[in-house]
Amino acid sequence: MTAADALSYSRAGQHLMKAIEALPAPVIAAVSGPALGGGCELVLGCDLAVCTEDATFGQIEVNGGVVPAFGGTWRLVRRVGYQRACQMIYTAAILDAQTAKATGIVLDVVPRGELLAHCHAMATQIAGASRAAVAEAKRILTESSGRGPETANSMEQAAFSSLFGTPDQRLRMEAFVAGHGG
Image 1 (tube, rainbow, N blue to C red):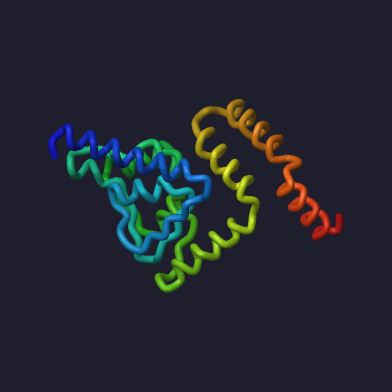
Image 2: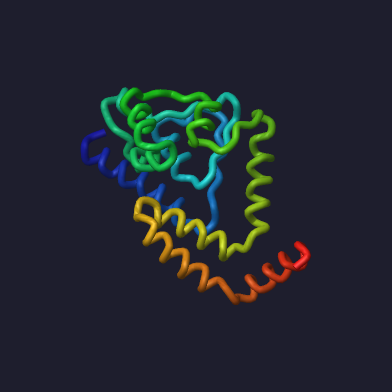
């Protein structure tokens, strides 16, 4: 690629990550192999990630003389913390599945034959919650990251009050109270 091509490629990758984050529903990454470079960035762009025991993860771009180009630098910091992100990016470390879980890149590690069923069960559980509330929670989690508690608190207050008293909220609260002896 030329430098101009690389710029277009990076912009396209960042646009894709932004589109995933903007979806009103959570996105679950199901990883069953290597997620290196852009593949790892794609996983970091998803809300939740589950992998098989043989999956690997890494921001290996420095080995090719470049840096992550789809938001992998700051998304990795958000997932694993600053020092671990520095270490992973500077050394092009490749993590196995259990290490990826221990560092927070993935939520669960499951046998290969159980990956899609596990992700489907997680999606089904999420789908049982209020669609509007989940969409607002995702928006707040995404947009408030790195902005400080005051911004996050304001966003929570606005979302909470806008959802309160809707027909969906009333039905769900009544069902919850009835189911818990209230």
